[in-house]
Length: 193
Image (cartoon, rainbow, N blue to C red; front, side):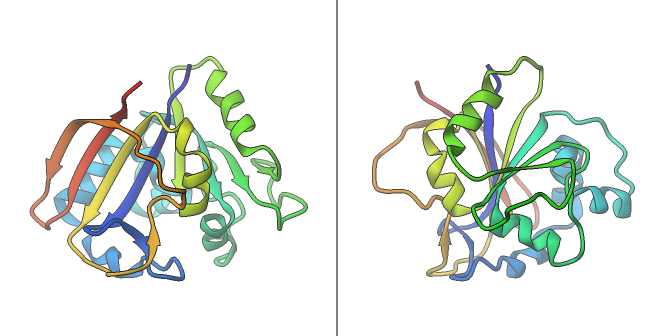
């Protein structure tokens, strides 16, 4: 069984973006030793065009498949990129796109949970990267096996939460914790079963 990992950046108060989902204020922390460490450990989470720009030529270490929501995918479409993670199998949860703009991108219009369960049941050494956003993470919350939370030293007060889900406590066990000089904290959690 392959793991579904929600690899996500958020503020200290748990928001992944402002009320409209914009997270550009966090970009100023994506540098130095922190960025070098993340790019080395999770090179596949860097979009293909970013890998080319930064000279990242590394094998996928954790993931060979990506699942993301329509809003996250739209960020790439807005800059003319139809397969932002061409080095991974890409799935986009959407009801608004009728046809995929790229052969590497499979659209999931219905039964997202069922499709993710199928992906998790596939054989293979690498897992599935849940790229975001809030709504899709909320829909898939029961399927998430691992959280890698990159907490940036900012407080929003309000915004887009990490999970757009109804209240129900779900327990995870803390694993690795890494602190960086720029104030970023990276925590890894595994779901308690």
